[in-house]
Length: 184
Image (tube, rainbow, N blue to C red):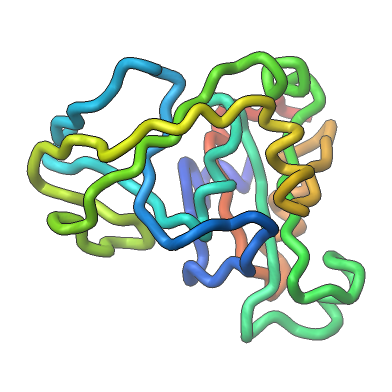
C-alpha cells in the first residue's frame, strides 16, 4: 500500500509519452462516460483536459485503476531493455484482469475542447471558465482502441506491486485511480 500513500490519483511524468499509431493532430480532450456533455462548468474552479498524446491514459472506464509507463530522455538503457524490450517508443498500460469485460462494454466519449482558455497546470490543461465542447467522439471498444494505437495493454493481478516496481525505475509513468486497485 506504499504506492497509494505516494501517488494517489493521477500522476503524469514530464508529459513526454511517445506518439502512438493513428494519433491524430494535437488537441485538448476531456473524457467521460456521459454521452450528453457539451457544456463544461468548472469544478473546484477548473475544467480539466489532456492533450492528444496523453489521451490514451484515459481509454479506460472511469474508476479502473491503471499503471502506465514509457521511456523519456532520462530513462536508462537498462530500464528500456528490462521494461520495454529495448524499444524506447513502446508504451505499456497495465490494469487488473477484473476490468477486461468493462473495457469492451463501457461507453466512453472524448470531448474535444477549444484551447483558448486552457493553460498547462501541473501536467494537465485547465480552464477557469465554462467551456463548450467542439465535438464528441465515441471511443468504442477500448481494448481494440489500444491495439489499433499499438499500445501494449496487459493485465496484472497485483497492480500495486507493479506500480511500486515502476516507481523504482527511471521510466516516465502515470498512475490513475490506484486507490481502486485490489490489495494483494
